[in-house]
Amino acid sequence: MVDAAIVHGENQQGYFFSGRRYARVKFTPYSGDETIVFGPQQIKDYWPATTKAGFGRIDGAVAVEGTKDEFYFFFGARVIRVKFSPGGDDTLLEGPLKITDKWKSLVSTPFDTIDAAINVPGSSTEAYLFSGTNSVRIDLSKDKIIYGPYTLVDQWPGLTSAGFDAVDAAIPVPNAKVDGEHYVFKGSQYVRIQVIPGAADKLTWGPKPIADFWKSLDWS
Image 1 (tube, one colour):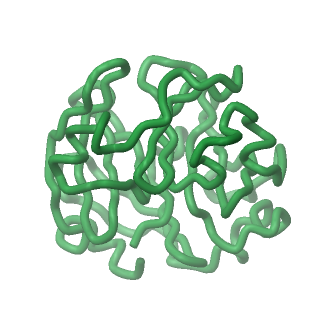
Image 2 (cartoon, one colour; image 1 turned 90 degrees about the horizontal axis):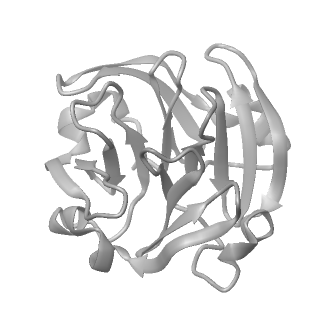
């Protein structure tokens, strides 16, 4: 099971987290070509900033828009902001903070924990957050809810048609053929969807078994 994943802007490779381990994966979208570059290894041994923050694992992650190397990592009810370069150490820039202290607009919503997140295509500050069966669109910079909360069944018909009522992890498709296309993982399955701001998502591929198309993740 994939708990969280990110794509680094410098090398366009994926970092996949599962339990207390992670692996770096080089993959070519639409081709089935993917291989482990590094790992799997213990998160605590190679991510000192997350260890310093007391994060035993990574529950969710999302890129800090406008940067190539900064990410928010979520663990339980807490969030940190981390900067890292491939092959180098990570640096703790902010946190750990309670999610609802970092973004007070999420108080009294189901989002005291975050399972996954997707940057809103075309926006420099907004993201879709996922927690259980719920989603919300939020401006992370202004700490303002744009839309929601709502259930995936109500507002994500593409994911719903794939049988996804929740999201474990999501990453953008590098050099996507379709604007806003993302890989989304749930349990043993994954899909590609097109995320369209202000409109319904579209299922572009899947659902398919992770084991059949991401053999580099057989350790997760």
